Image (cartoon, rainbow, N blue to C red; front, side, top):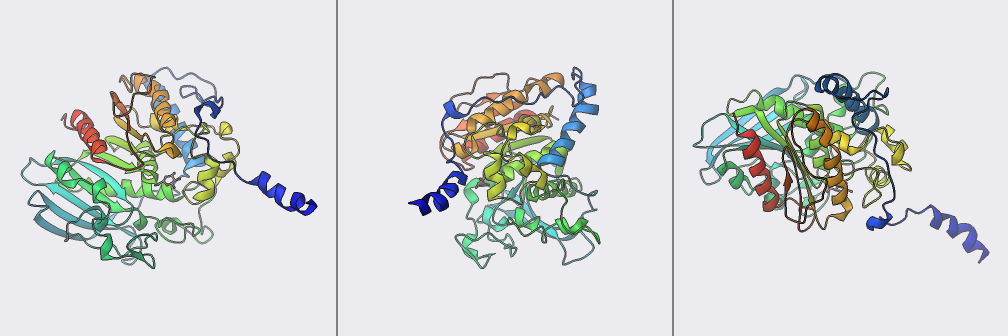
Length: 419
Ligand code: GTR
């Protein structure tokens, strides 16, 4: 018995408590003020927001949460382009573009898959988002080049390489035909091209582009994996700006889950994105960090130590000391249109926390003359609400479904089709 007490009890006490799913146990928290600058001044006009508060918040997210990118972006080079007309049953032209980030042909690169609708007036608005398992996973289109990059182990993956069995595996999340028929182009790239999703001390992917003699890994305030994925989205947009088929001023950046976190961070930093869509992005994405519900700051930093910057770990035990919360990340997207989507069974991502974050970002849109959500009441399941900011909690699980895309397309029609 004595041994039990001495050896087991401290371990039990140190173990993390189970995740909380009880709203009554979330506890009190106070969000940092969106419209008060760090030196205590009230932000009451658009000019102060743009010149002072927005840059200040961007810096805080850079220094304390995602980590800042250590240098200016390189000039993206198109290393190769493959084009095929009349694919997907004659609906689209398929382009596959290799974007090279350094002068080294074998160095870091990103393979962009782009479908452009046929039979509509060009240039067209576009959706851009990263995928989890290679471009070939997003469609059954047999002509899409097969990704040979490092893959997370799973069905159809052997020794971290995808096999043909993964072709079209996640096509339900990428309803290309539906998107193309609505007159949009759609672009994607594999997130592992930018940074393979495991903790290797940032030896692979794009981080080393910025290393110098003494700088061989990110400093505590420099980018983790989410920062690299977001950076890649901006590099894809660099390319889209040069493609005459694309209306680059009307590109919606979107992402699911960890890639939704990346899409939000990309949209927050890069104002060229005309619209941002967060699909079930949860902790470190749209959800408020101060709410103890589902995933927490500590859990995410423990399970995925490479996602955020090292500084973020200092908030593990008390997110209440964070100088920001995620409503401020959403506010950085104002006045551009933003869609935040939750799923009712995706409690890990804290649907209510995602809604409250969107609701608390409202003052930014208001200051810039737009109505955002326009309500502080969480809607029922499958009842989207809002204006320049829209929100829904879909029935079902953590996923991207046709229902989600139907809402995103309607939202894009309302905001991107106005010329
Ligand atoms: C989970 C993680 C979430 C979310 C998700 C995903 O394991 O805890 O934050 O990002 O993965 O990306 O699918």
